[in-house]
Every structure is written in structure tokens, then in C-alpha cells.
Length: 344
Ligand code: FA5
Image 1 (cartoon, rainbow, N blue to C red):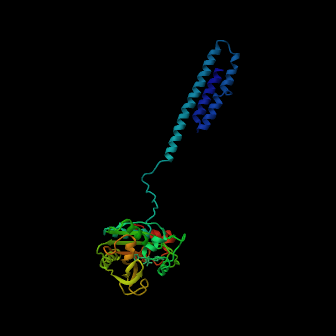
Image 2: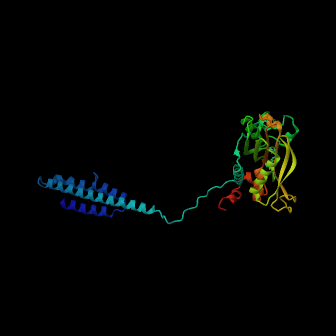
């Protein structure tokens, strides 16, 4: 029996040592130390031993169990450490590898142009005002000297929500709202950028939704000369020092006199497809604030005068970047948009 136990020990230790993974090792543990294992089997024969030998064999059996258990435990620790090492090796980070570039978006060309125009006017002392895109008929038309039924309403085909509420057709209602807030006290010097909506048929230069930037200055002694000087600075800073502007008589019910403002084309005045061979490109509408508009907003039109202008940054961006179709701004093709990334 002693011989059998020692052989079992040698055999179990060798197998434990040779185990390649934790599963094999556990199988060995179950096989040798389990209730139905060979050591228990050997001990079943103890009954045949003399009273002297029995405790000796019992002690030996315990020693063998302890030796096998200890060998298995040692091997288990070794296998576990090996597994951790393998895992760590697999997860090693090579800090010398070059990083993968992160694809980041970029500013929309229209946002760029709007922000550039905003910065330009802020540098001239203007502040920014905002108003709602869903507007009342009163602010969009009536407060701008365009009562119901006025034929000039036809100049701006509108999306009505109810009889009195519509999507604003221009940023001019912010003029009226801002003047009201000032309660008849000048000076007012603001620009208001924002989205506007018209029932225009979409084509290369018209969109049913587009951007406008309104400008308004109200103070004592404001003249047409101030308007012209301001727009000249604006055009030269935005398009280049070599550009000129010209004012053509026009009509808006909320300004008197009214003008349309053209800037010399990038062709240098020789004439090209973009300026339709005239050498000039229209960029905005403007004029002296109509006395009726001043009065409706609570300003004394004998004391105060003002000028206002409204430009379309979509068309300005088209000119600045040489874009031939306004619809590119709204279809948002990534190939088009990424051309305006800062680093390019
Ligand atoms: C107006 O909207 C006036 N409120 C401007 C104004 C303000 C005049 C203050 C006087 C005083 P107009 O309808 O011309 O004016 O539009 C102004 C600019 O918006 C145009 O010069 C053009 O650049 C742009 N615009 C007009 N319709 C469209 C359209 N469908 N798509 C893109 N841009 C447009």
C-alpha cells in the first residue's frame, strides 16, 4: 500500500507539472483528490492492515494528498501568471505608432461668411439683435409701412401659417422690434442675421429658405452719406480694397429714399458671366428709414433719422467663393462642404 501511495504521488505530481492549462489541471485535481480518486481507493484496503500499520498509512495518505494538492496549487499559480502575462503581451500598446487622424467637421461656408460680416460690423460698433423666424404679419409687414393689401407685399411671396402668422420673409421685422425696445431713444446701431423664407422657386440664385443680415442705425443727423460710407467700408473689407460700390434708386416701402447697392465684379469691370457682362453685382437693398416706420416704433421722426440695409449672405458667399448654384448650401454634399475646411 505504501508503494502504491508513493507511486500515485509521483504520477500525480508529474501530471500536474505537465498540465498545459487550468482546465487540465482541474481535471487532475478531481481525478486524484476527488472522493472517487485512486488515493481513496487505496485507502479502502486499510481494513486489511494491522492496527500498527493503519495510522502510518493514514498519515502517509494525508502526506500524499497534501503533496499533490500543494503541487496542483503551485502549478495553478504558475498557469494563472502565465495567462496574465500572455494577455498583457497581447494588449501591449505601441506608443510609437502614428495616431489615426480624427475626421472632424468644418464650418459651413454660409456660417463663415455670416460670422465674417458680423465681426466686421461689430468692429464698427454695431451689436447683434435677433428675432423670431415665425413672425406676425404686423412686424413682418405692417410695422414696416406695408399695410394689408399693399401691392408691395407681392415682392415677397410668403409662407403663411395662419392669417396673421407667417415665416418671416426678411430680417427687417427685427428692425421694428428693436426700435420698439429702445422706446424712442437713440442711438440704435444693430445688425440682425438670420434665416428667412419666401415662396420663391428654387434655382441657381434663389432658394425658398435663405439667410439675410439686416443693419439699422438710428440717431440724430444720420444721412445718406453715412449709409454710403458704411457700405463702402463693408464692401472693401469683405471683397477687397480695389472694389467700388454704386447706389441705384429703388423702392422699399420701409425706406425713403431706397437704393439697391452693387459692387464691382471680380472681373474688374470688364464683364463676365457672373455679372452678366455689366461689371456690377447687386449685393443688397438699403435706404433711409421711412418716417412712418420711425413713428410706428415710437421714435420722433423730426428728431431722429436712420438708415437700414438688408443683404443676402448666400449670394455674397457665392461671389466670394465663386459658387455657381445657391442650392449647394442646402443640399449639404460633404465633398462640397469639406472644401471650406480651415486648413485647406
Ligand atoms: C429685402 O428683403 C429688404 N428687407 C432689404 C432691405 C432692408 C431694404 C432694409 C431696405 C432696408 P430684397 O427682397 O431685395 O430686400 O432681399 C435682400 C437680399 O436678399 C437680396 O439682395 C438677395 O441677396 C437676397 N435674396 C432675396 N431673395 C432671395 C432668394 N430667394 N434666395 C436667396 N437670396 C435672396
